[in-house]
Length: 273
Length: 273
Image (cartoon, chains in turn blue, yellow):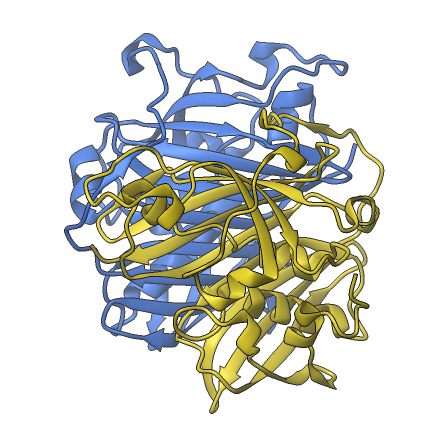
């Protein structure tokens, strides 16, 4: 295991600065087809909020909007408090290049307390992690090499065959872990929220231009739940409700191996076929 | 049917102002237990964006964050463009009272185009609208009187009996329409996205302090889909994935009577038991 200071993920989300103004650099290791992987940019913005001296509590909800492409190179992150109360904190974050906003986000932190707790969503029926083969990353964007995907259902890529006329369903179930291993925290969970292949690729089994326009993450885990996961793989299940006239949604659940629901996500994605 | 100028909903979301700066007043008809119903505030912010002279396209995604209680009385809405491109527009909106932010929102508009389209979520099996009784609104907050709820499954309230020790599931399926009838549009659909009873009320069949902290709506409909609905009731299905240490989520689907998926929503809610 890499130490947290030299892990590629920590290097990718590293920032200099303080008091709401930070500087970072895109990481070639997390490059997507064009510009950086969206998950790493979201994680970097989450990192900025969690670095604030006034930040208290743990992430409860966050929405990341992708308003303009991020170019490879340096960027600024501006994090500002909207409202800091005892139980919840509302933050606003922007990622800028050349004084132009590329992403904006709202991040809500909250203090968790003992209350009635129950999970209604069922944990997917899945084979053990060890029994599922690691997906080859050959031919996929660079960022994929920072993860190990073990696809149980709903894969995409050369190994799954590509059929232009394929219309199955868009559901994917997969084990996911950082590679090299890294203990799970709220920044890496934020990044993992965006690791699923675009649903339309799975649905149609072909590549087409796509771009996430908005990603929402609802966090259901506490620090101690993430600590319990440690470097183990987590289980992700993603599907689309609908593909409709140039946009589709993706909803996903991220589960710990001990069947704790860590986060639920939803995103809207632009596509062109 | 009321004309659109005198319908209580239109009066409630009415604004004066232009060029990004608007003024409005909370409507006693849409009062919640304390302050206004969250849906009407979100709808008013959506109305501000759609009133902008530069606004183009239809709502695709919106997130509304509730950072401080809104007091009865007047408020300001500030709407500013983050990025206006040919295919999508990103807007930032704030609702303020006394120069303090009560809500902030990000709204994304987009132009829909003919593409591959398919809905994977199944339309719920439900009885005809006419065969389901209208829920009595007696004892419920004032805003409920502006809607007709026909609860098919997962009700809450005196007519359903209250049991402190009840733990069923949190799913609700219901027909919803404006009362008096009003043709559906993106502002009323925004408001309807927040009409479901707090899931913990249904789950526990008892009332407790709750507050939505963040509401995300993904729109899948076009103007013509909403026009087709007109004044007919739409079908809503809501559930919770998990109740976890002071917060729960709610995910919902809103369907036209002709089985078109109009919107999917997710929200995080604070609760205290």
